[in-house]
Image (tube, rainbow, N blue to C red; front, side, top):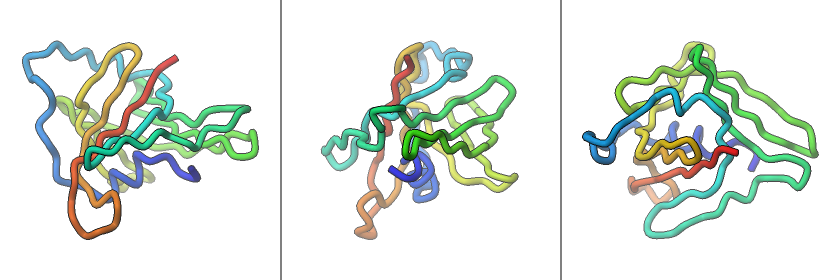
Length: 138
């Protein structure tokens, strides 16, 4: 895909959901790594991410200093957009040039899996639906 899905999803939805079990332990330092797009789930459908090239994978990278990279591999060349993010409880807010692009809840976070959850009009039908973005770390 030309742009990673998270930004389209974040721009669509600003209504937030409560995260998975708040009693569950949450280590925000696990966020700071490269996250490769895996799939999107909405309306009981799962859409595998098909934007990876054989020569490289698209990813987002959260860094401890609050910066974030969105790397899209096009024709085997990485195209990088720089963002900043803040984390409040389990909600990530992403900014580009100081402007809020959107927010998502962290539904699940481990050393190898990230699931972001938001509400938006994923299919363009005018109805808001739950959207979950799945990422893997390698």
